[in-house]
Image (cartoon, rainbow, N blue to C red; front, side):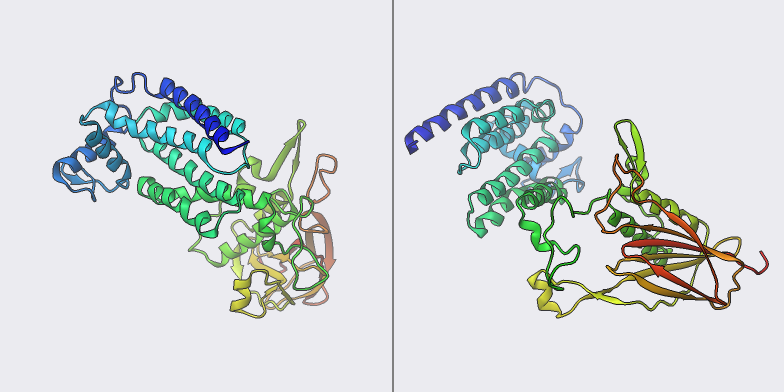
Length: 422
């Protein structure tokens, strides 16, 4: 296909997109009375035109700092270009931003998306009820949708064409800057989430992979669907308890921990084919609940340190070696005097841990609950709903010492009864 026929085809598609946009967004655009916060967007624009102060929005003579001024600039510019201050002129920037993104879908260079697919994408976007509703009002959402979408697709198109690095990151910055001046920093979340997902899907994030063992102690493993951790895997359980430990040490600075894997979706419960079973993090959360109303006590810990791979070049420029302690532990006294130990083993090999008590007289046997898996990415499934579940055992003290063997990738809860007065 030569350049002329391609241009004509794009012109035809652009005409279809324009006619569809005009039919859906322009009729009666200026006949509806102001809704919602449209007045808060229009009044600062009128003040800008009257006073010439385009930097600080004003409402009723007072500075309005709740939102950046970009939307007010668009409205004031529309008033100036159309020569009238009407609902139609005020709402026109929202509709135009919607058209701008739909047209960008058609005209972006590159063959990563066929012309037919671009037309379908533009039609789906323009006909979305939420976009139609917001695109016919002068509020932040339509401006934000248009700018965010243009930033993402500018990056995506440049990346798909293997364009220059400067264009890849600077061109979307124009739309990101306008988005910052529209609603502030949240645009970076909406921009970088799809960018990271695209890179992850394409395998560009393998530089961050360092799970499991490799032939080289310093080399990363390749992430696959089989070994990628997620909130449903055993790694989440260990991560959550480590967060609880850190929160307890930072008290009273940290008052509450909220995390989607343990609070949303039933607190780690999963439903499949009308059957409900627990993710490992649910068991870990239930085990750590024993620390409710306990008082942390001092615990001295000596454990092995494991060398971590320095995958990124920037990290290697900072330090030659980087390691982490394989065991993290928290001790606390229960209201009845019992001693509780919460122990996370992050290492890849079993560890022999000797618990030595001071100023505490144990009574009877220690009760031990262990949540362990062979690999961090192991998880429960519908076919094996209890593949990872707490195992309970008891162990007798040898004087004031308790030898404990910690499995790799394990969470252990130890309850030691107190002999003294309750």
